[in-house]
Image 1 (cartoon, one colour):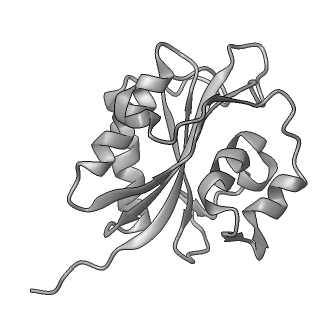
Image 2: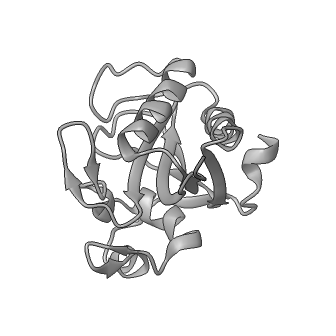
Length: 172
């Protein structure tokens, strides 16, 4: 029997309903507990102003690096299952949510598929994604440009560190 091949993916996590920090921590621990996923890096925790639909509460955001033997779409299914288990309801685009998990990158995969675009098509415009991602992957190339360089070009007004400890997800 052959050993599973693990690829590196990056995830963006966020929420602003209920206890989003607890929801994100629970999601990361659920991923890390799986035999086909290992959480290998987590950013600090950020408090961020709403984006897109601005008449709602501030968000908490984080990013994580996951080593996984799952294919991209299978990882998406796992993430959607975790969201559903945390009572995520998709009522309005960019609206309030208990938990959101986006696959940002998956190895060197570039795809424009109906269910999953990789890299995430809007990640390079979003400070609330780039700031936490730069905590552990500033040199990661996205569309040929390093995350740190994308971050330098992006508006980060109002984004603040909510927890300096990248181990926040173990205790939240």
